[in-house]
Amino acid sequence: MTARPTILCPVDFSDASRDALCYARLIAEHFGGRLILLTVEDPLLTEAVQLAKGVSWNADETRHELARFAAHALHGDPLRGVDVAFEVAVGNPAKQILHMARQQAAALIVMSTHGLTGARKLFFGSTTERVLRETTIPVLATPGNSARPRTLDDVRRVIGRILVPVDLSHPSKHHVRIAAGLAKALGVPLVVTHVVEPVRSPLAARLHLPSIELERRARAEDTLTKLVAGLPGDVHADALVGYGDPAEEISKIARDRRAGLIVIGLHGSPMLGARMGSVTYRSLCLSAGLVLAIPPDTWAAVTAESTVTSELAHS
Image (tube, rainbow, N blue to C red; front, side, top):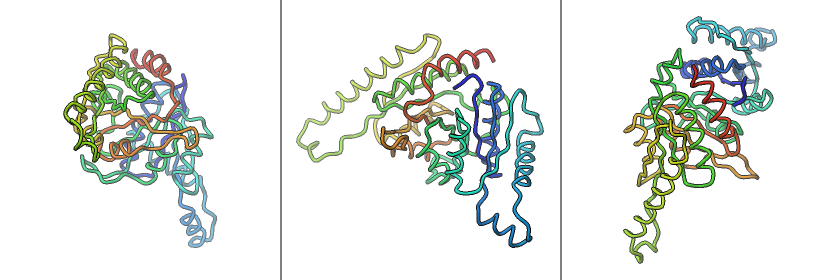
């Protein structure tokens, strides 16, 4: 994250977006960055206003409503050291959010999942889903059922512990280092986990399955141990190998370890850019806490370890 980052927070005037705004405000305030609050109007509604009232829809009216919403959501506390902009767009919400993020060179998008609460959410908002599928910058997804933190100490209490699930691919080290930087900065423990999936294949019946499972677990444990060993000594990190359905196990580990933040990678390719894998998608659906989704090749780990750690650690 740059020294004075731009934080984009989409707002739809719901209670869930109030929660997201509280987190966006604290991040922007801490770094003395720029906070952009964006709301997107439906083009059919803007046309309806003109037909009903005989006057053209005025974006300034919505902008004033957005400012009032922010003042109420933030308990009337003025934002300190933050350049705030209120933006209004018309069109498809996800498309406009992504466009604004690119246009303003945002370092982070903070938005609500807009899903059902609890451990068995079946879906989250289609806008959030599309943003996560197409984003090229990190997204902090808030669950919409939090206590709306007012200070960084509140954030520490909400998070409690950070969980970073890895698939042992090349980006895993990158994700662990980002999570470790945040854990060090916030003074919370870190759990690095990999979930070994059961072998489901007709060949399994012909093979000595227990030895295969033991080998896979052993390799996972060895890799996690090396990942944790490479972290700074002042980061309290545990390695944990799970077994079963990855998304289900990630959700269970987060609950059991009381991890209020999951740091998870978004899959990608040179042709298609960031894309949500099924594990990431289901983990988001099942999570009752915060999720920081990291696109490929963005928000460099060295930045997370240096800028985020050095500045947050001295808050």
